[in-house]
Every structure is written in structure tokens, then in C-alpha cells.
Amino acid sequence: MGYKVAVVGATGAVGYELLSTLSERNFPADEVVALASSRSIGREVSFGDKTLKCQDLETYDFHGTDIALFSPGAKVSDIHAPRAAAAECIVIDNTSRFRYDEDIPLIVPEVNPHHLKMFENRYIISNPNCSTIQMLVALKPLHDLAPIKRVVVSTYQAVGGAGKAGMDELFEQTKKKFINDNLPPDVFQKEIAFNCIPQIDVFMDDGSTKEEWKMMVETQKILDPSIKVHATCVRVPVFIGHAEAVNVEFASPLSEEDARDQLMESEGVVVLDNREPGGYITQSDCAGEDAVYVSRIRKDPTVEHGLSMWVVSDNLRKGAALNAVQIAEELDREFLKGKVDKASWVVRLSATPPV
Image (cartoon, rainbow, N blue to C red; front, side, top):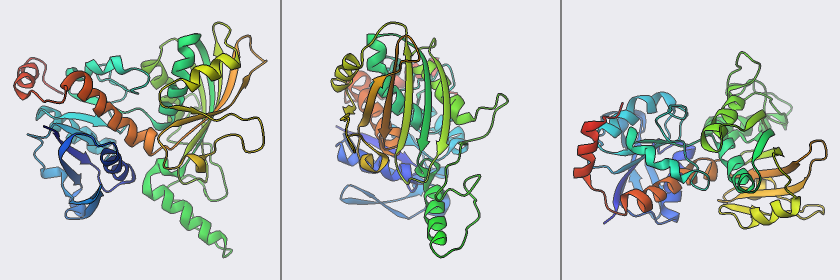
């Protein structure tokens, strides 16, 4: 017997990928419900070879729904994720709302699946930031060989990370350029067409942006609190796919050969590292793919134990939808065992009610 699954924010870019990924991976769902805002009631979305009509999130009763995959924006998750959890529905949230709550697990299945047991605290599981996910999938296998002391990362992030509106702005501004016209920025701080913007999210007191802060805090929560992270996050005129130049300092020696061999054997990682023109992965290469790709692995001679690499992934797939569905799969394997025991949930919920 399968699950009843709700996809919240079904009309958005990540919502579309959630539905597609659930279908492609044959997640054991007997019923999938598409939820969105009231203005999208009745709008049709695809789920495999089926068509679903969106229902109103505001009035939806989560009782009887086993798992809800949320991607509606942090403010909406703040209202409706606890409401779903209180109705005995496990929430896997793609927004930033719950990532930094100490009692809510922040999960990358290839990195910290052991943290998933914390879901019983509040029946909410958080999906990390897309740029953090791909970096940690590449770093975890290396951290297992030699402890990581410090990471310096520069990201080159697609406009898809800002949702459909960001993709539309790049498309429209690019069209305007070809007719010698301009479209003022709305989604981004400056024109994104044929440009790079060294700001993602708001600035903080120390001069970092919140996106850069997220990569530091999430790395420490997910992988190791002792790792120091310094990030520079840049929005680039690419529709889908984040790229990262990652410089890693280890506490002990790790050769580029051993690092390459370890990554080649690691779950979720594909190494394409040929030292020849085009012998690496780019953002356009990874669009629509599930893996985290690693290229240009090489020694960093400026520190005692240093390596550099180029890490690329589809931010809407592994950076959001796929990671969330993998969390649901891990939940099914390790905790639900393919069968939801509602009676036992009621007992636990009465002892530790979701907030």
C-alpha cells in the first residue's frame, strides 16, 4: 500500500520538478495531490502520464495525507507546514523557513541520513539551500578520507534559483538586447542579461550576503560544525544549473589521485575530469540531470593540504526536487518501512506536539 502525497507549490518551477521526479522514480504513492494558492485552483499540472487539478492550499485538510513536499515560499511554509504536521503529515520543506531550527533536521541523504531520525521532533524535515547541497555531496566523501578544515567557494548560480520570475527576466532582457533596447531589472538588483551580479539575497552586517551565510551555517549543521566556510555567491545569466569553484584545505594530506578515486566511487557523484579542451562539465551539460558533477580536481599549492575542484549540478533537480524526493525515499526505507502507522503517530504527537 502506497502513500498519499501532497505537492505544495505545484505550479512553480520546483513544484513542477517535484511532480516529475516523483513520477520518474516511481515513488510509492497511491495518490498525489497538487496544492497551490487560491488563484491557481483548477489549474492543471502534469504528473507522469496523468493530469492533476490544483486544489487550494488554504482550505486543504492534511488529515489522511502521509507526506507533503513543500515549495511555496518561506512565508507560506511558516503558516501551512506546522498545520500539516499537526494533522499527522510529515513535511519535507524546500524553503528556508525551518533550516536553522535546532530541532528540525536539515538533510542531504548522501551526507547525513542519520540526522533524519530527528523528524519526530516536529514532523518537519528541511531541504538545504541548493548551492549547499551540491557542494556537500562532493565534499562528504573527501571529509571521510581527510578532515576538512576550511572551504573557500565561489558560486555561479543560475537565474532558475530565483524561480520562474528570474528565468523570465533573463529571457525578456536578452530579447531586448538584440533590438538595442533595455528592460529595467525587477527580480534582480541589476540587469542580468549578459552580466554577473555578486549579490544573492540581502546583505548582512559583515558584508556577506545571506546566501553566503547560508552556505557556511548549513555546512556546519549538516557536515561538521568545525569546518570554516567563506563563500562568494554570484548570479549569472544561465537558466538552469549552478557551478561552484571549490577550494578545500584539509587537516591531513590527500592527493588529487585519491580524491578522484574516492569521488568516482561515491553515491550521487559523477567525475568528468579530462585535462583537455572541453574535458569538464558545464551548467548547460547538467541541465535535467540528477548527479553532482565534479571536474578540474587539482592540487592547491598555496596551502599545506589543499585541493581545488569545479562542482556543477542542476539546481532545480538535485538542488531542490530530487533531494526532497530522496529524503522521502529514505524516510520510507528507514522509518516508515512502506507502511504508515497512524496510531503510533498519534501517541507520539500527543507527547511532543508539532510547533
